[in-house]
Length: 178
Image (cartoon, rainbow, N blue to C red):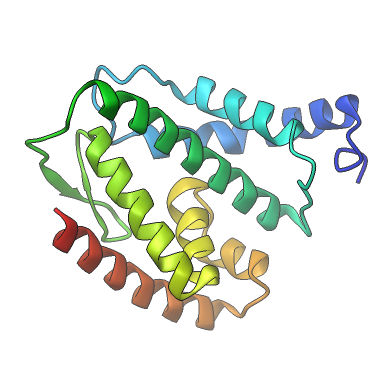
């Protein structure tokens, strides 16, 4: 892939092709953020693009894997943003709402929550790195179970079972951390 070889024009072409999907994923990732959140979906996608272009080891096996890499990148951007915000002010008074994937997330995602979510994914990565990638793909890149299964080189049924177990583990971890 020319983009992997560092060709700027190839990255620009790739970015223009995937931008609508990344913009939609970024909008979903930011949906639960505070109303006064300073990071917008467009900025999140552009920051992810900049980070990916300047990364030496950006190598994707397929479309779903590429979106998984993008999801991880957006997760790190949101965590960096939350850490900066948390350094200014400690979060509190978080209310939770249900997502369709049945993981509780705050409707006003304070930096403290984003940091707990990142801590949970990092802990999960120590237990099972592929499950951590699954969380990034589902929650941050907006991949379907089918797309995530493809990126992880697994069957749909295995990925669905792993997602259910991971979702429950993540829910439990976040409740204990709150």
